[in-house]
Image (cartoon, rainbow, N blue to C red; front, side):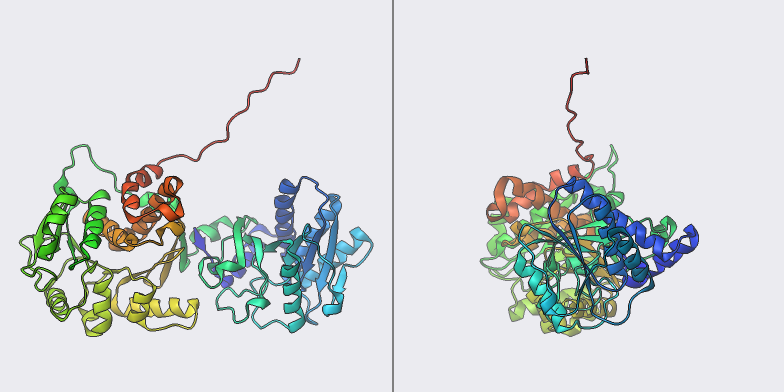
Length: 516
C-alpha cells in the first residue's frame, strides 16, 4: 500500500476534481458522507451523545458534513466550532450554512476554555479540528481543549489525522495533540501512524476510500510503502518440480565467540529453514560440537582459535554471507573482519558485532559491496549514524547514510522500516513477543537465506522482515508474548510461507428455515 504525502493528497484532490468534474465542496461532501456511513454502520441508530468538534478549515468542513448527516439520521449530535483563527476555508463556510439550514441553529462556537462543554465518559468525541494542513503550533486554549477531551475518557474518533499531529515533523508537546482511539484516514494511512514517537496518538486506524482518481492512485510514486501480504506475494519465487539444492545457493554464516555460539546456531538454522540450498557456519573451534549436534543439516568450518574468530578462510565460493552474529569485538576479530571485507565481493548481510566494528572503524564502510543489508537494533544504529533528535531526524540520517554507502538499512521496531534509495518500506507483521534474545539473529538468517535463493537484496530484506514478523504472529497464538522465543519463530517459518497463499476467511453462513 502506498503512503501518500500531504502534497500528493492535495494534488490527488485537484486531479479528482478536474477529471470527475466535481467541486472541492462536492469532494468534501463525499468525504463527510463516508465518515457518516462508517459510523452509522457501527452505531445502528444508538442514541449515544456524539460531540463533533470542527475546526475552521477543510477538516472542520468534513466534520460539519458528518454532523449534518448524523442529525438527519436522528442521532443525538452536538456540533461545536473551534474558533481558533479569523481565516475560514470556502468549503467550511458553505457547510456551515448548510448545517444551520438543517438544525435552524448555528453550531456552538468555542473561543476559550470557559466555552468548553461537559463531556461524559459514555459520550463519543469526533475530532475534526485540524487535518494534514496544520503547519504551526496551536494556541494554549486549543491545547487545553485537547486535554479536556482526554480527561473526559470518552471514545475519540479522529478524522484523517489526530488534531495537532503533523504529517512530516515531530511533536514537541504531547498535550497539544488529540489522543484518538480510532482514526479514519483518507486515501492512505499517514507515516506518523508507524513511528514510535507518534504512533501512540491513535490506537487504531483505518483507510476510507473517498473516491480519489484511480489513475492518480495507481500511477503516483510514493517514497513510503506499507508492506503486507499483497505486497510481498508477487516477489515469491516458485520452485520447479525438478529443482535441486544447488539451485538455491550456498550460504555462509560467520560469527560466534565463546559463550555466544547460540547466535550462530539460530542464524544458521533460520538460513536453512527459509530455503537456502546449503548452509555452512564459520565459527571458533569451541562451537564445533555444538553446531554439529544442534543442526546436523548445517556444515561447519572453524577458525584455528578456540574462543574467537581471528582469520576468515573458507574453501568454497558462497552465494551470500551473513556475518556479525555473536562475533565479539576483540582486536584480533576486528582485524579478521577488516581483512575479510578487503577481499570479499559476495553479497553481505551484517548484524550485531559486525555493525559494532563498522561503527568503531567507519573507514571500513566504503569496503561494503553495494546493496549490503545492515540489520542494527536501536543502540547499534545510534553507534552507526550518531544520535538523532526525533523519529523524522532518524529517518533522514538513515536515508543519508544509505545513500552515501549504497547500503540497505533495516530500522528494527514494532513496524520495522527497510530503507534504500530514499524509499521507506514499513512492515506490518510482528508483535511484542519478538522483544526477546536471538530474534535479530533469526532475522539475519532469514534475509541471508532469501538472498541465497536468488532474491534481490532489497526484496530479501523486505520479504525477510515480513516473514520474520508473520512467523511470530502465528507462533504467538500458541506461546503468548512472554513465552515466545527466537527458536519458535524459526519453527513457524513454514507456516508463514503457507499463509501467503491462504484466502481470507469467509464468515460462516447461517442456515435459516424458509418462511412458511
